[in-house]
Length: 82
Image (tube, rainbow, N blue to C red; front, side, top):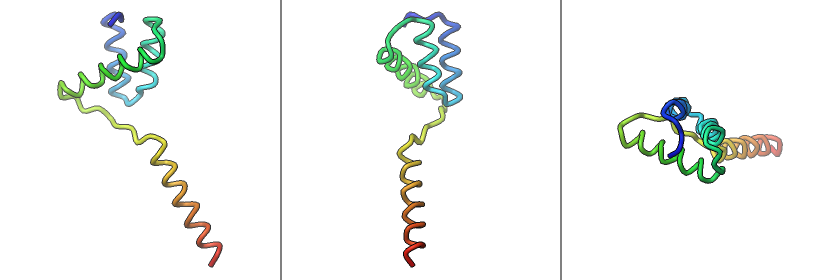
């Protein structure tokens, strides 16, 4: 990887905070590489951190939010029909 050690520490800190997108943005700003390459490198850093025993936050993604929203709308719809 082309980033400086200080950038690597900043990226790791973003990952510890659960801010993967910000980590990718930081790497792109520091190195000038493309989005795909930055994403792949950040994911490699994240995997190495996990392999080294660091407990990192997991993201639920927007699928979970959409499921909850659909369930809520279904309940409201069922309530309105009865």
